[in-house]
Amino acid sequence: MILAVAGGKGGVGKSTVALNLAGELDAVVVDADLAMADLAARRGPDLHDVLAGRADPVETVREDGAVDLLPCGRTLAGARAGDVTELVAAVEAVADAYGRVVVDCPAGMAADAGMPLLAAEAAVLVTSAREFALADAVRTRELARELDAGLAAVALNRAGDRPPTGPVRRALGAPVVAVPDDDRVRRAGRHGSPVAAVAPESSAARRFAALAEETRLATEARSSVP
Image (tube, rainbow, N blue to C red; front, side, top):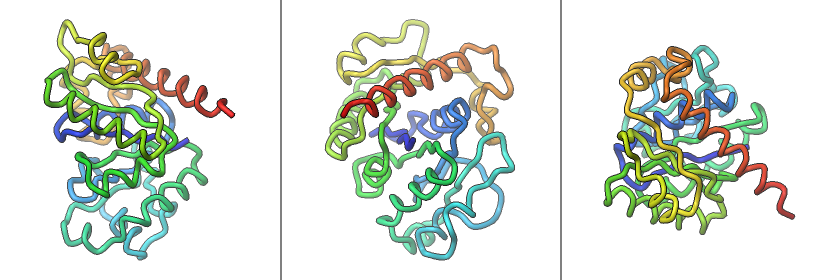
């Protein structure tokens, strides 16, 4: 399974959702935000090296953290040196080796945002309750449809006490899981860990588990269609 975590607007928490979903799904998370990498990793080869032909994607996966990770470099020079069209093959190679992959997509609608969706079997959209973020999510949903990445679920991230899950579901046409704003999620993420590893009984951990379950159900239904 290859799952893309996407969102039209930066700053909505895509990387956080990708990390926590990967933890719930026992998947490798691939940081495919080539210019704005956000998932912590130690030194060594990264996705920039893979796309430049200097490293093997499977051998670049780090297994020394709470979640297996194919990290991305954080320099513009590294981003420019790689061939973004090689991303699909890299992600598929990791999926062949590990079974499940969650790809943290870049924000926006550029070609580097489309490549992970092209590789994915399904997508999770991350948005907030703000009107402009929802409009960007609608545009990203259309891009996912064009690239045949079915929309599995929507993460309404950093939601308040009364999240507008109904209106968001009607706007995007997929199950919506509201994830509460919890500083433990951010603290865990800074160390490369999902919140379930440090606060398994928290509301946020339960919500990420629910999001993973919605994703499983949607991908299973999609794969059963002849």
